[in-house]
Length: 147
Ligand SMILES: O=c1ccn([C@H]2C[C@H](O)[C@@H](COP(=O)(O)OP(=O)(O)OP(=O)(O)O)O2)c(=O)[nH]1
Image (cartoon, rainbow, N blue to C red; front, side, top):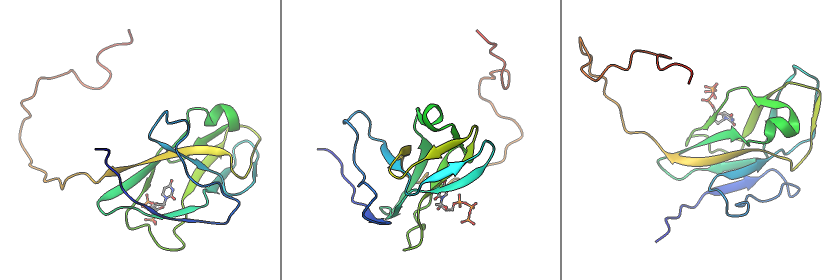
């Protein structure tokens, strides 16, 4: 049976298109800009995504750009991946996408600029300090070469 979770969601206004799955191609859900933004090359903005949510208990959400975001809008997500905490659930806890413009650009209301999914919190980690690790050695970072 398909597993389902319910998320309480509030939209900033009725101009924002409701969240939905696109084409059934992926279980990541696209998010849209909730404001028109004009940026000069090098400028930073926290683009309003027009949604606030109460995530299901035990979950967090991650927000990443769409693959086409840079090609379409010339922006890079400044935190690379946004983490939305379960506790970020109040009426003013709007989701935003922090971006840096790599060229002069315009983003318009309802442009699909990023995508999100929810995931379960990781288990509680206990750090067990040891003198030596006994796993097979890979030779350190970058040691397997270029080809
Ligand atoms: O790309 C992002 C990243 C975070 N958030 C929201 C949800 C998250 O729960 C909250 C705080 O994020 P985080 O704890 O990662 O940021 P911080 O820099 O530690 O800020 P704070 O002062 O809120 O702890 O900001 C977004 O809307 N977009």
